[in-house]
Image (cartoon, rainbow, N blue to C red):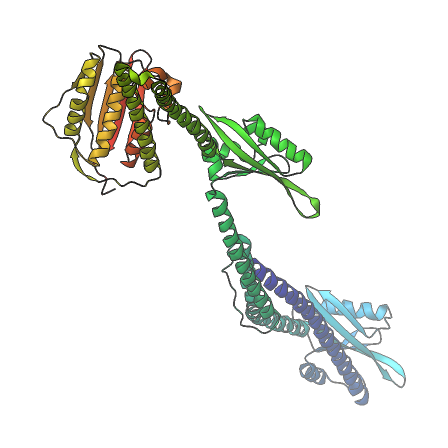
Length: 590
């Protein structure tokens, strides 16, 4: 903005400088012409005066040299009297070194011989301008001689020098005054413009808090006021836009469903956090690239193409492989059409309904499994009861045998119902843990003692090297005993005769690890994620024959998660399995 002020000041000074120079030249020429004309008129009148004086005093014959010298000093000019042939009769002498007597005589003779009718002539000799005025002397209407007045132009040169010096000094003073006044004036009128321009630049950069001063009531003041009003309006608009943008960003980024926005050219312009987490993608790999180049699933690309073609909203369920898992999505696709039916792009929203599908499948499996599990004991009880009613009760041995079977099936049915109720309470979080400090080593010893007889019946070796260390954690003693009973009992159940079940305890800074290692039948890799589902059995025949309900590990999983722990399984078919239970030492402080 300083450049604008400088340009304005330079333009103003240049204009005034040109005007002053032109005016100075004009005034100098006028003064020069005025002095030259005045000087010439004075010489002409002086020459006429001398001529008249000589003629009235008797002419050349009666004129004396003393009179010529006196007139020469009085008029400050060289006076020369000649006869009619140009011979010098009287001469006041050289006025300067400009011209000597010889040259003076030549000039006079030249003027008379040429019959020059002009009474004025200028000669340049030795660098000096000499001015000659002459008049004829008449007596009885006859020319008896001539009177010559000559002088140098030094007076005019001095006058010219003084004129130009005066004009130069006046020009310099005027220029200084103009610069000072011009600087003040331009500063006064350019400062508001500079301020307004700076504010406009800040507004262009996005700084809408910038303001300019409003200290004038003229056009510059109106400009400053308008700039400030514009800045306030832009600031309000930007605040509203930022608030709206923040709300929209917060909504998009924190919505539970994945979102992808594709522009009208097919380039991906937006993906939200949920989409990145669901599909495990990086923004730099997706954004500003064609959708069919970055989307791996053909079903999604086909859906986008269908929306582009039909320009209709589409809702579709998809089963997409993500890593090693299959996940269900309800995909909602809609075209984005702006004003005047201008195509803006396509929006896809991915609702993850995997859990809903799992719950639906679980409900179906639960109904089927519960129906199957209940049907078997009920059928047995009903069949044996009908047999007894048909006459078998008359045989005491048959009666006792059938009643024992009915009792066994009733116990199995009761156990199944109790496990279902227990699992239901745990899953609905309707139970509370009685947290206290407990010694895992003691609990495991009690459990191993309780299952020792069952292991002996199958010839299975139970190994638990109890040492003097105490593995103290915070937890519910009865619930954890239930966990270990289920896990170790399963290990004994699925381990062949003469096998081995080993329990180990390990301690870290924050956790205690309980490992149950068996040499049983093992579990296939694809079955490991399902063993904690309700009613799922690795070996259904063996589990059912042992009286298992298929709910034990499901209960175990929920109880361990209630203790903020974790259970993992490592297994090889035919070589056995290792169940690792990780329990936190501190629960109350977490």
